[in-house]
Length: 281
Image: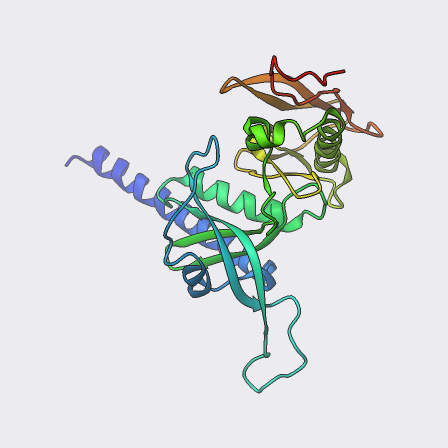
């Protein structure tokens, strides 16, 4: 091996070590910041029967494998007042949860997606955005855990639009309410966060909106989301998609500019084309 080839190989080794150091540093920082959200791997394995029976949403893609489970875990946010010399006695909680397990840590982008999701979702406090219950970082596992409505009617918007049993129930009034909920969530991401950071969701579509039994909508799946810096003159757009006939169509966007008092959200009615549906306005 000549000197130039050796130097090139060493440069690659140094670059890999620097990335590993950056990964570990960010991991330790986030673990310290969100210590109260840590969930034990053994509790997650017990809830998922050692990661059996994953499920796939309507357009699910890596880097995450998904599970729905009944999770028993320690409540680190509300420890009891009983303390010993070595530990605080933690109360047990039971939640119906959605679990997202990182498929592989081999790709730098996948690690970045996990950390961005964890950092963003841990800071959200909004009724129309999915709630992060906790996370697990043990061994090679990187896992996010979300609160899921235990009611049987909890489902994705795309499933509701494609389900004959719900199509008639999903009136135009309800559909308009869903769009208002989505608009409120986007307005929060763009304008109302306490840290003033602007977040682009980059994937507002039916398969990323879940509904509860009262048809309240929550945005989920922040894999493509990103923080963006905006100057006073800048304008950005957060795309909104419609699932139509199995294809995603870019139908509108939520526009916003730094310094404006409120977001300029385009009016969008989410609908599923159905020639037999007679109750259209």
